[in-house]
Amino acid sequence: MYTSWSLIKSGYGKSLNKAFGSAIGAFFVVLLLFFTSILPFLLSLTGNFYGWLGYVMIVFSRMLSAIKTQGRIVDSFLHPISAALLIYLIIYSFKVRSSITWKGRTV
Image (tube, rainbow, N blue to C red; front, side):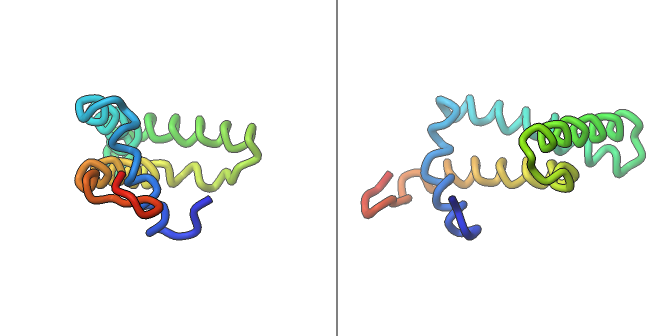
């Protein structure tokens, strides 16, 4: 589908600001992503048991999904990075929503 970061950024940037219904909906999605995907990993780096447990549970669930869908299991360990990139794309989409063009017209 997308072959480069710039295509991913422009592709998701044009529509993520509409994906969650409103800015408030997007805000809660960003909070959910942070608290369930990034914070456990950060806490695990400090030696926090619950952070470690949360990160292991995230990786395990992603591994199960990868096995079921014949995806790459090793990508499961990178889930916090994926979540951080999605948060970035959501914020980017709101920042540039009036200046993005797609197929020659403003979106």
